[in-house]
Length: 248
Image (cartoon, one colour):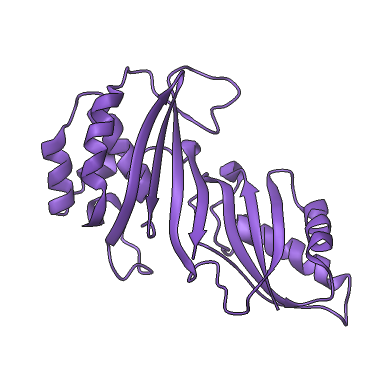
């Protein structure tokens, strides 16, 4: 049987979502807690698989990551949630668990993902793990206007690191919005999927434009031909959140 999980986590102390040898990851931490829960009802429960909708990098957070658990168990979803949360560290929390169709797959069934990046205009002692503080004054209207260049089905090879898991660097960006709210700037991007470091490089490029160092000419160049320049503008992971995964 299959279960759908919604999960929130602070990625500061983890080497990303995906399980790795000799590294502390969100997926690895969750799998240990899930297995411990199932082992409590030994003979009635068995673990098969636990997969997320996609990877988040080291230090990146999630407001609503989606995952699926495939297992055999008699435990009701609300009991699973209670038992798993009791054994998880405080920086990972299961928001909900529900039964899902057997053909549901957290990654393959997803039609789009949405991230939000948070920039702080002011220095902060308490929230620096969750924002990127930029001292310079940014031209937000200019950034919002230039953001339109990223919307559509385009080649984002200039905005990603080489990754053997990515067969193509073509991505359909459905929406990219920038809003100015008091001492925070929010950059929200929704796409079919995301390449490694893609969001952070788009954010970094837009902030460089907001500083007045580059313009539309450079952004179009990065989108039309491969360039390593955008790698120099990579935003730190602290301000990035996986906000929502969308399904049919």
